[in-house]
Amino acid sequence: MSDYVIKVENLSKSYTLLHQQTERYTALRDVIAHNVQNIGKRLVGNYTNGTTPTREEFWAIENVSFEIKQGERVGIIGRNGAGKSTLLKILSRIVEPTKGRVHIRGRVASLLEVGTGFHPELTGRENIYLNGAILGMTRTEIKRKFDEIVAFAEVERFLDTPVKRYSSGMYVRLAFAVAANLEPEILIVDEVLAVGDAQFQKKCLGKMGDVAKEGRTVLFVSHNMAAIGQLCESCILLDQGRLKTFDQTEKVLQKYLATNDEEQDFIHLTDDKVRQGSQEVKFDWIRLQNFTQMPCRQFSIGEDITIVFCIKPNQSYQDQKIKVAVEIRTLDGIQLCNIVDTDSRFQLGTLAQSETISVCIKDIRLYPDTYYLSFWVGSTTSTEIFDYVKDCLSFEIVDGGKLTTRLLPRSAGLLFLTPEWYLLSKEIV
Image (cartoon, rainbow, N blue to C red; front, side, top):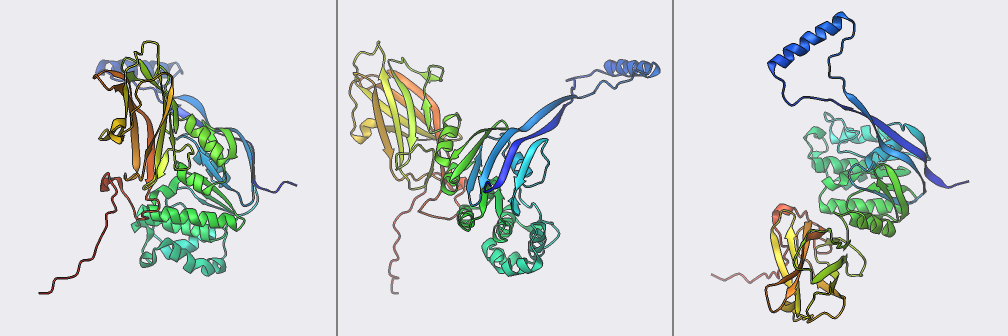
């Protein structure tokens, strides 16, 4: 007998989309003529108001099958609209599938949206009991776990305040605390954790790891690939409602990032890429790595980012000495730096063949955000540009890493600095 706790067989879910056809502009004479026409159609019994919408069948999930065993930590990833949330709603029994079957063994606790299962007029204390009852817990079980839930959520001061006055972060803290501490056999968590601050997110990841160690099952949806890699041992990749792969997390993340133009750690620069220059020397491919030399595009503050790229000459190249540069700019186009090889006493010289170069940016100190990389190669003796590819690859800084657990909003600045601090003796007056 299989030891699965979740078994999905040929699961599909469809929705009907309505498309209303409207005209850009209608003159008064058109309205009058249209109404007269409708009166005539009513008289002959063939009336229609002319605005019947067209229908389209949309499959949010299509023919998905997999099994999850007890105690597994499974990530679910995919682009927006891939069907992740629909799948979780079916597993949580919120919506019914159109086709297929779902077998679940054990009690399920779901955290899918901010405030799910909470009544806004009730206090935090009352909602703990309400949410616990929804999850199938007895009052005795909830009371036994009550203090642990409150301590984890860090909402002691607001426990007797109606939750309609809670911030989204407080909502999430309390909802996750209830779901994780009431000992469900299966814990399902959607991207809702992104609402919390960095410190609480780390706390939640640790709690989900503890839940799995206790033999319970965790399903985790996130766009944070670093969090998926840290927590999940296996991963499901969805694409347009279909299951693309279900394998070890590292393999699935590599496949996902390699096929996502906006979120990849490797790019092959084909001729159709937007680029400038004479192309006498060209960038062939570019890859991002972490300090373990593993492909990666998400980093913490203080980590080392390694950029590896290959450049190659073509037949028109005349043995000129070259220099190479890497530019980093923000998501909104602010140029942060222009890293040139000669500034680091590195000189490539001339090219006889394709060369692979590694550039290591140590101890990155940028605030959490997305940053774009551009690559330039040209002559050392003239202003000639051989190749320039702008914003062809991006990386993310996702948290404070080992340096800090405090909330790091993008609005705080660009550079994260940790200077030396000293307490000087007070001057005696």
